[in-house]
Image 1 (cartoon, rainbow, N blue to C red):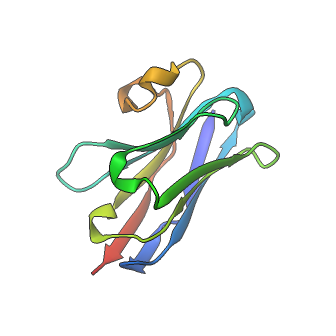
Image 2: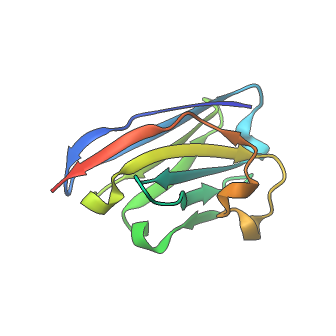
Length: 125
């Protein structure tokens, strides 16, 4: 599975961005997809994930109500709609995929086998 993430940029606090993660090499409708982020000097952290059939959505607490993960199986693409952005959301955002990760562990970045290249999101105050 090859993943290509895009959509990052510079935005003011309170603004919105939509990240996209296009997959190739395999259809995503049976793959767990996740978004993670890493700020300078910090560990990579879970942001959101979507289950194989799109029925299970998970978010880290700090983004609940502001971010939405979704998938378009026809386009083989996963999205992360980010709203009410805060300076603390600034990071490089990565999409990830895994074929057999369990739903109870989909927030653990170490278990994902496939990664996109990352896209920078910078939120100014």
